[in-house]
Image 1 (cartoon, rainbow, N blue to C red):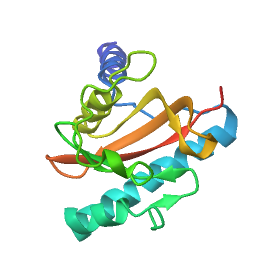
Image 2: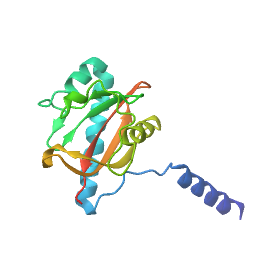
Image 3: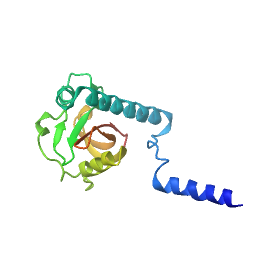
Length: 161
């Protein structure tokens, strides 16, 4: 009698602690495939950054014609204080602090992305300018990971309204 009760308690604790965290599903299997592509892309960039070092990685991430810009996916990177380290389609923002930047709904998305990275990885939804859609503001699902304890990187997919 005690074993089933303990199993239920353990399962509940794992669920509420977030140990069963999975990528947010998209709309149907194509959304799930897009989310999987996003996660794989970010992990590839994380491995590259750890292997090549910050200077080389940021040069690659900031190259709008480089291997870390793939169609609608591109890598962005920030330090833990919200300073932009890589943003290949908006190079004028590199070197600026975006800690207090809000989306049109008031979401401090850089803060939320930084928190997700500090927690090991995570997804954040917010609204952002889509350079592939004539700079139209769209909902975006971004996935982020830490590179080390001083900076993090991620990428995002735009959602259909």
